Length: 303
Image (tube, rainbow, N blue to C red; front, side, top):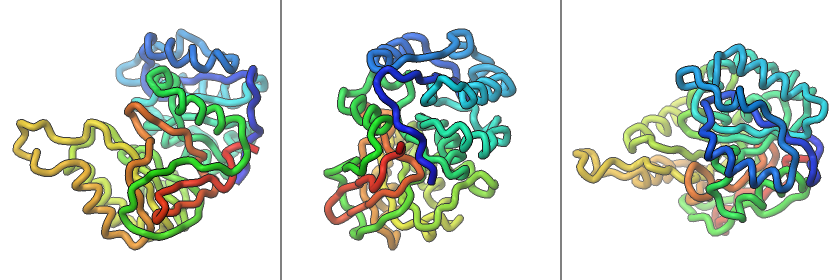
């Protein structure tokens, strides 16, 4: 796995919007956090543009992503927001371009697709906050993002995780948003999951849909191929109290589906759409100790 060069304070980061349109107020808060440490380069016209549920037509969003990858001044790329849209341009994201660019790419949610393509290209990236989320996160999450961009060394990523299935495993860290990740099944864009430590989070998916997604991954052989699994936050996934389906919670589903696996499984990682979103190296080797409730990077996302 190729690890791109690390950043230093003052380096230039290119902001892109390959998915949904970005709320200006949320963006301003996150940009203030990043601008205190790095230079930002972006086109406000493209970031806040909206064509239906995407930040502009497919060909324009793809062209802007390609331009950011080719920008010789940009040391890293960070998504402005998730949402939806990367699936529509996935076929145009050439693995060789990602590898030649050799820049850390930061994103999550819909950005799962972009990170997965970087992994397929043999390039490490960072599953971490988008700009529109960053301003709402705690300082510890800011520091974790800066560390992911700047520190190549091995380090502890998460501790205090709940043990669901005991065990110990090492492997490349892959996964992301559960719903988005599942859309790569049956396509040539799914990374090689053999020996991987998988991690998942989601937002707004009701319990029966989480059950369907996890069962689909199991039927597709994803869990049989993997070496371990880390569950993050599943925000807003419970049925309303007034619903006839409220007898089953998201936590019930996740525990029942994952407790059956024959690989180490932990719950409660501070990853997702809520108040915490800890930056993780994507595609590089990590160590999961389910007995101790820890996830540690054996190498950083950068070199």
